[in-house]
Length: 210
Image (cartoon, rainbow, N blue to C red; front, side, top):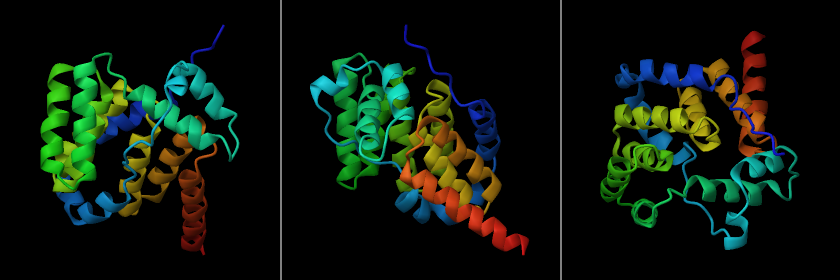
């Protein structure tokens, strides 16, 4: 029997914390450009139909034991599972939103993702895509709200965690960023972005201590 993997233990606290951050959006306006370039939101690479048939919990198990050669493929499979709404119409709207983002039209993307959110409010990827679009438009408060909802609906969403970790880095909240990267590594131990970030931030903390 496949064991259901729990979400990282610190995610609930971060969902509450984002709620507090949303009330202080003026603190984030100065980092909009950096967030758009580095927050970590990206369009998925193509995944084969055979890969998409693997159950999500099994994929998380496989990701825990992945090596440097296999982790990226499993990441793509997990993202493909996240993007399954159960409705062909919602899946189409999600793809249109992603395409609009790729074409540099975040305002159009927001319309598509908002339609997804309106019709499928329990589907986390609608919020995650809209968060990306809001960042691109400089709407930090709404973006943070959608990150919060993404993590509430999908506490194992390591991409949303990575985006929030980058926010913490821009705010020079090194300890908070390290905690988020640790949560990512609980799910995705081979993540090169998280591992490199942890190494960099630990060196930074050591330098501050001198």
